[in-house]
Length: 264
Image 1 (tube, rainbow, N blue to C red):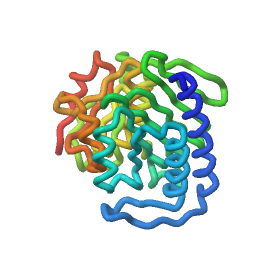
Image 2: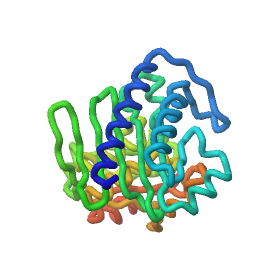
Image 3: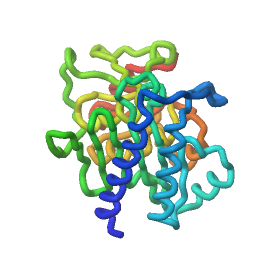
Image 4: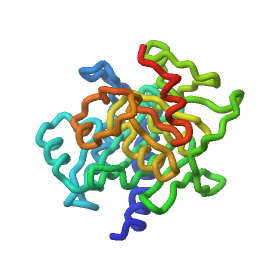
């Protein structure tokens, strides 16, 4: 299957997965995992669907998903594989459970240890973001399809820095514009890819931003640890939270923004 055809198929799978999530939206209970984060039957149903479909689509690739990333053998196999599917069945589970509409289904492909392609759909908003290396980054909504680019331009009264809801406890942020949180890590990085956000800061898990990273990078943005070091994608596959915060932005603004954010 050509890469273009592959991306089309991933888009189809993301839409199907989104419909599975929507069938549970507003009518599902949840439980807490060991790290006190919530998980619902919707997370598990979406991941089971995507794992089965991606394994059938690309049986030679490894797979890492949020709800199945605790298996050391799977992680070891993924670190040795040329291709790794990295899936977040519902990014923004708390938003999903709170009916905040900004949750997303994320499908990312790492190839050679780096983001190669990604599709992220926000089912309630009717929006999908997608990209593959060398073919541009795209945003589809009911009104049509548009190519997107990260931007270094800023209007202080309008532009925003995207941050987690706990940012006031985790960081000292001196950015002069607005700081916003929508409860979905992938969506934050996608807003940067669209040129709406000037930057996005997160200390999250690899499945939260692998797909979005492929889109952001194809849109001309960069993703680095806040200290300037590059991400080691294969090291992050063990399901541990990134030990250092990650900042995504246009390369022309990255250094400036990094200097305005400090760990609390």
